[in-house]
Length: 506
Image (cartoon, rainbow, N blue to C red; front, side, top):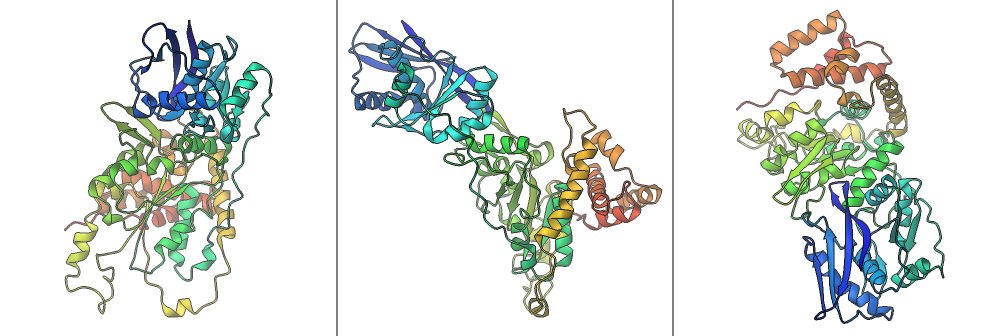
């Protein structure tokens, strides 16, 4: 007899159904796991042995073979413990034949028989819904799996409770979708004194999901401005929250957490490696650019990042996908992010202050800013100078306008964009102006005659690339939305051009 228990393997946020096959045969006692398992899967036999011993079951003195089919797909992770254990229980007739028919199972077993949380429950639950199956998972993750929709879930705290449920002597409660804890108070823009032009650029970036670069001396407030961006961004829609949660689930960040509608804000240290930023590693995990999907990726001290790591962001910023290609894995993670970066004008940071600047100015500024390549800079829609805050500004009372007022204008502009793009086919439909491209961009952002003449003349003088030309149009469309204007006028083109930065040529 061969017992079959369905489970899944993960390929990015997608799943591949795996058939855990367990067979007991006569011969010398042995316990083998085949089907291209990694170290964690190969060690499952010891966890399964210990969990069964904890509930009073001993493995029979037979040859036990576990095959994870298809055998040519690498199996990674500890979530194969539970399907292997259920297969053994079926083969040993400890649970009725057919007890797990119609179920998808995953979970890690402790040596005491308890079910421990694992990564990827939400994508697995979505796969169960797609295949018209129910789901068996650890009790701590029943609330996460419940977000998949119309799904029967058996969320068991331990192996003995699951056996009793399958034998009909115990009934598990139905888990409810778990909400994230109420978010704390976000930093408010009213905390920042002065920097009116920077606040304006931050509002534009939020309204159209545009990439933003802030350049200024230390202490000017660049990091404070970036930290206040989440407070003016609209919450995630239901579909966006599900996308973000699936990525975080695969990365293991959803364990014990509920679904949140707050946009992600990721701020990796400048020592981060390329795999840490775009994903990869031995087990091909999502990187920071994917963990920030539908949210903000903040890179402070931009020139201090490794050159290769920064250049690896060019493809995700353009396509909205982070493709990780390895010898044993080729996966793609969603990575539609809003990049916000900050940097000093030079290494000492005081380029414009003759009393503090180094003796190598302005050569040190040219060398420092040249660390940011032209192609990466070309992908940044808004670039602003953030000057040092004067003492007179710090002595003033807090500004009357805070994040709430700015967030209201941003939400109004986003609502205009949602209504505008709803008329286009769902496949490839942009959600914000920053995603508009091709014929859609030409249709929604065509400027008036004066604006077109200004843009053409500026493109020639500034040597704008085709990408830079289109990014100016996107920003101009956002400016028009903030003004409540149906069309893009010359004033919108002029302001959008003022935010373009020409790459430093040493």
